[in-house]
Length: 103
Image 1 (tube, helix red, strand yellow):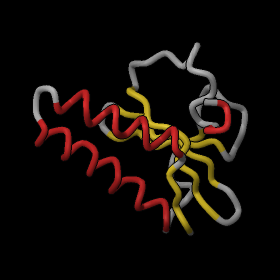
Image 2 (cartoon, one colour; image 1 turned 180 degrees about the horizontal axis):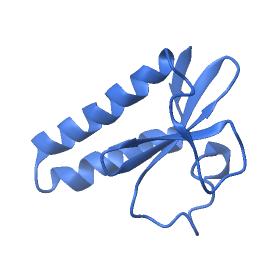
Image 3 (cartoon, helix red, strand yellow; image 1 turned 120 degrees about the vertical axis):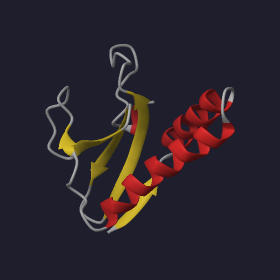
Image 4 (cartoon, one colour; image 1 turned 90 degrees about the horizontal axis):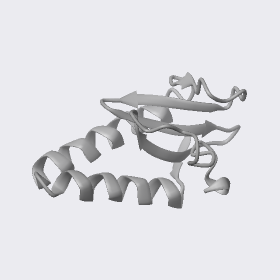
């Protein structure tokens, strides 16, 4: 299965790195690498993540990686990484981070 990162998800990942790197570039890189490693597993197991509790759509799924929620869509021919947000963030007011077309 092909895994693709949406533009909003790439922006999210860059923002995570920049925020953590203020204190520790090394830890920022480790965190981003851990997120990337988790996403790579979706190539083999595209439905390994749980359904997003706030969404009534079986294709909207997420991986919990440390303190982050990696939201993605498991489609017929690909996995689209839609967004990456900190788990403490309230989804209200964020639009639909699991749907990159809404961001």
